Length: 282
Image (cartoon, rainbow, N blue to C red; front, side, top):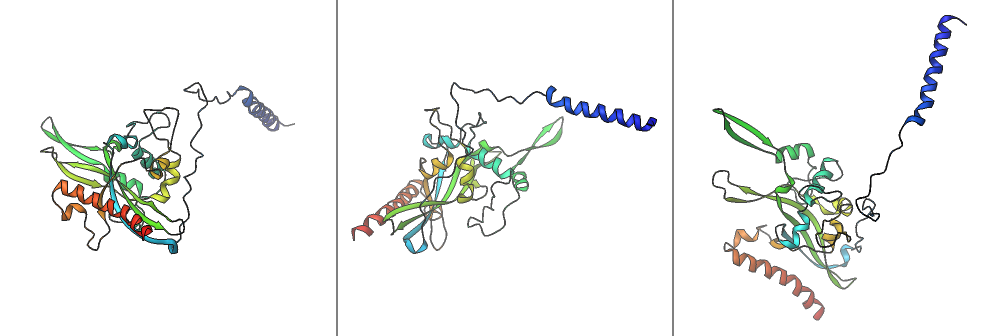
């Protein structure tokens, strides 16, 4: 055997020995330690709550309304906390942000609540949602870009459709769209300039993500529900700010007094409730 062949032969044996030795020296992966005394059930395999199928022919009456969910209300705070992720628990906005960046769900422009246009690019979207603040340092003006912060989202808007299903003989509701909104503050006066909706999400598309995200509850660490449970079971409190009408105006555009606006929202809600009672009464 020539010198070159001998060198290649010994090199082959050395490489083979190294490969065979790797499994014996490599450390096996270790499971993460449990943070409690019992085995937690993962939500990653959860499925959205199955809703009854409704045919168009079965809809006897329907009405579209838009509502505001204010996460500062105690009943709605599970949508806001924790502000920073704690284990598997995240705020609703953080869940949505992560899913958007991962391409699991799609957002539509704030003026495209019926989802007729193209989905927004998530990178462009969150770059647009960042803001720039300027301040003086050593006599020079310095601009700092502040990235989007999920904690800024203090409201969620939902577009939903109430309807009477004659096949099942009952009033029902479906959430069609979800939109996060943040308050706009005047940098000089500190006064509120109103609310800025950021984008619209088709609710049917995001339910898979919501079903795999647990809701943080302060009262019972053992009993976990998903954000899908939270919305479908309607554990939230919301205020109507718009109903479907020919001029597409929101309540605040045709009623100025805040108290009268609340009364108008209540009137719309009572109208929906009375529709079911009146229909089956007659």
